[in-house]
Length: 163
Image 1 (cartoon, rainbow, N blue to C red):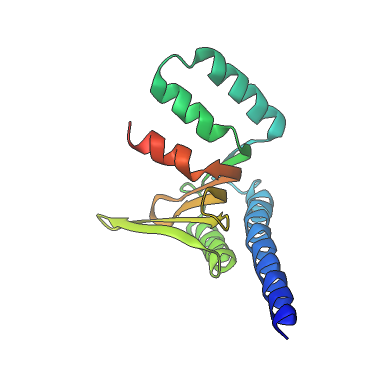
Image 2: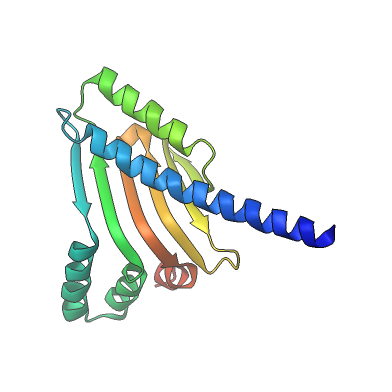
């Protein structure tokens, strides 16, 4: 019985991790659906582009802060930045509703409110807490969505924050 419980628990955790990862892919798919909408601005950098960014950043990194920021980038394989503030209000509301529905059961890392603006950060933490994968920053009042796909070292983020 104990062995069966361990197997079921491991399987359910694996399924939950896949579901969280699927949510980030679903959000990126949603962005692709809206990318042709008027006033919906998207910058998407894929794995090849990220490789080039890392090479250029590595060449130009000359301060400890630059090198720390570069080390955070190393685990990323795609970045998507969306600004939907210029969209038709009805279309903008529809996009926000769909993003919120996709992130409803996602793992929230942080929610902060400052002068009426709410920033929500979602991601998936590794079991040991050393890595965060598929980080999504959603600020509905600022009409911004940022998806950082891949994994980021929590230790490297901490080092960057203390500089």
